[in-house]
Amino acid sequence: MTDNDPTEKTESQLKALSEALETGTMQHARRMLNELRPAEIADLLESLPYTERNLLWDLVSPDKEGFVLLEVGDEVRATLIRDMPLEDLVNATEDMAVDDLADLVQSLPDKVTGEVLTSLDTQRRGRLEAVLSYPEDSAGGLMDTDTDSITIHSEVTLEVVLRNLQRLGKLPSNTDNLIVTAHDNRYIGVLPLTTLVTSDPQLYVADVMSREIEAIPAETEDDSVARIFEDNDLLSAPVVDEQMRLLGRITVDDVVDVIRDEGDHTVMSMAGLTEDEDLFAPVVPSSRRRALWLGINLITAFMASWVVSNFEGTLEKVVAIAVLMNVVASMGGIAGTQTLTLVTRGLALGQVSRQNRNWLISKELIVGLFNGIIWALVVGGIAFLWFKEANIGMVIAAAMIINLIVAAFSGAAIPLILRKIGIDPAIAGSVVVTTVTDIVGLFVFLGLATIFLL
Image (tube, rainbow, N blue to C red; front, side, top):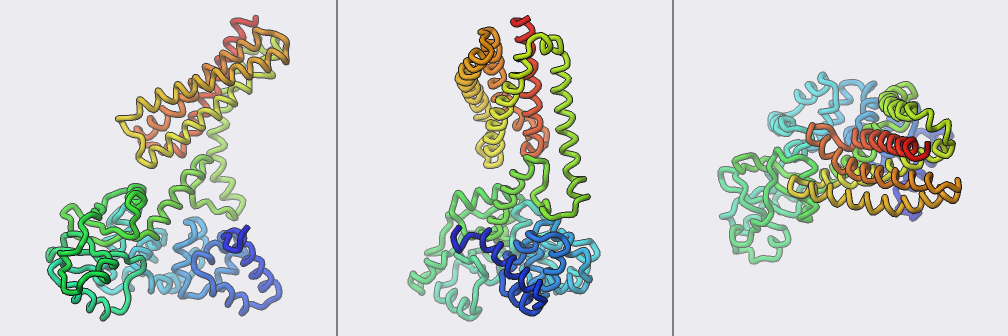
């Protein structure tokens, strides 16, 4: 690992803080902790068991608490704020930007949210309520409504714009463009800062502004926002309502959070967990959450066992079938999961549509057939050499071809069906596909064995 490796850095920070706490030098530990950025403190908190986490949380400076709460997962955040006094929670939100504040208050108890809203001045409260009026996973829920300092009109000169910026003294973070609007607040375009500082100051904004960056409608889903930023290499983008009136802007740091959350969601959903799962949560809640998914898988296992039970006579007479039957089901499960993963990713990226889904399913069927033939020859040959019976090799080869074709079709079609009926393919897809390939694989193999080997 390099010196900049985040994992190595977290481990070294944990070690240093643990040594400081063990020696009783609390002031030293407090100073070390609060020299870190909020995201680094959040990493440390999420890397500690419950008791040690609370001890470390007590050392975090009050002016950093709100920003740290933003960085940790929902489950960890809930454990941290559970015992925080109401006044401390309200104070933690004082210096936060409106978009960050909106992210935080949605995870706070209703009583705390009410107190936070009451503590805000009229302007900030109005901006916060504007963000909260949109779904959390939309462009409106991501945006920062504080755009007054970077909004300009097209009929002023660049000299006037520069003078106004100098009077302000600073710009919001991640500002690469100034937003140009008409007097009725309708979005027109942007003025890149690079254009501003390299053009003749006597020119008007309308002469040099760019109209190429399209505003993002407030109802746009957050994953679509992420794709817009990726496709256009954006650092920031304006957000508008249906009448093209400027509502706010989204910056790349918000989009990075969306991408990270989407990645976590995809990985964790495959195991039936949420992206905010606390690795160091207590035993009982962790067991309770995982029990449901284990129960679902148990049902699918019994379904496969029921299929096997219908071929007891075949298994008793041909021992080789009992030895080999898991090979077909296992290969089908892996093939189906491969296709499922690709299609689920394609759906998430917007690459799979009504226009190309039939071609995609046909292509995956051909891939399943091609792989089925290849591995049928391999497995059939091994079975023949192992048991010295050609019929056994042919049966498992035929079962392998059929099951890999079924696996390819299931892996492509099931996520499309689940999406159609409103179920997240990342959550339910793997269970359904595995169930189908297990049952079909066992049924086909045992059925063919019953026909040709008895």
